[in-house]
Length: 465
Image (cartoon, rainbow, N blue to C red; front, side):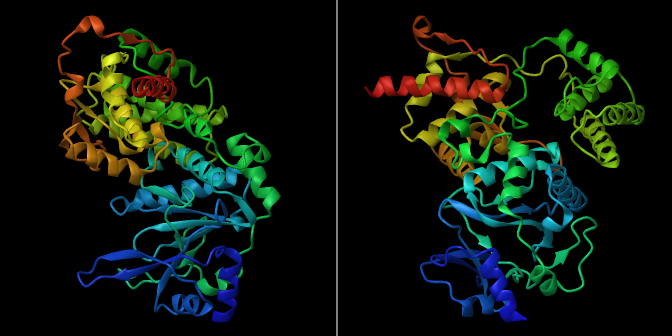
């Protein structure tokens, strides 16, 4: 059977044999991945299957024949299963069948959701599809990553791996019930590849963009991610009466378009909380409202029980979060960006650094109080188009240079993002006559970022010139 599994791994996963990655357990018990500048042999794959080594591979240049969703929410085991089932449901809604989707335990604490194609698809196109599927989970999209995320980045473990930290082997489970299958190796041997034309059709249905036009994603296309959940949030307008009116209209008439349920539920929950409605009564009201939207066909989900669970969770989180008080009266302010902000951001020579500094300035101008504001790492990643690892690296560098100061660490129990202090937001400008304001015409955070970052880049080029 091992020889058959080696053949199957070669067929499904391995497209590049040099270099590869290997997992090792250090003396202190920590586990690390090492980059190996060697050729991956079938004997090495055999050692992997037998549990003596744990090996991973990179992709085929700019293409990939698979997509893996990595779900890792150790602190939320119930939510972890909800995430897995949500991804599976979203993939089935997009046109895949349960037979196309393969779910396994990671060997440590999470799950992998695997898709295998009969040929290569551009990595950037597959990654955009994966992120779009994750975005459909709304608030549950946290705690998930995809492989590949982009060309030349981290590799992916070969199937049936033994995790060096736990000594446990990856095992396959039923993609719908998550119950373990009888024999993981036999299951793996039965995995088929999704025909390339059908997979491209599924990707098209989600991205709504033909494959032949987008073999690789351009920088301009990457910046056009304003449909993502965080970046599509409307810019705050400081209009209390309008926000209350929106919540009342939503309660009375329901959703006007699909894909807006999460933000609408949050507005309704805030409205009910600030109107003095008890949490129990609010859950009943929200559940009834969510059911009506489901019956009207205004939700992307096909499972009513999932919709109702989400409605209940939204109310509970809103009522239990002490920071969600008075938000209908003040949900930030319309950002006012100035030439002083441009000059400050333009001093950074590294473009990725400028991207992150500009995202911080935009968020800070909307939400800061005395220079302090919350900055979600996922949100910054969505605005800039950078990976979580890149965002984290540059945030650490900005802290080391004193550009920002960490005031409060991320708190998953309160679902609160990191809080930073940014001196640039409150420092006095010597000559205010020289400072000009920049008009922001876009109505969403994502579009506003793209629009104003273009202004920053032109400003930086002029300064260099």
